[in-house]
Amino acid sequence: MTPHRTHRQRALADRERLITRYRDHGETLKALAAEYRVSDAWLKKRLTDWGVPVRGVREARLLHVRQRAVR
Image (cartoon, rainbow, N blue to C red; front, side, top):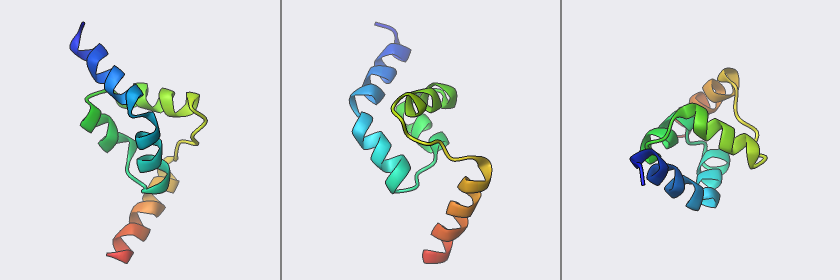
């Protein structure tokens, strides 16, 4: 099994956790992709397939500003 396939399988197995971290905890797609060692594009496609609205640049920036204000 190739390393890419192993990383992807791990991400797929953690589907609910990934969704929760992205949608509910506001973690970035880029950070999650890096942690799971998959590409941003691959993870974005999975989230879309799973029915999770992917944040645009503007939404991501607003979320980041709000999170920094809470700290």
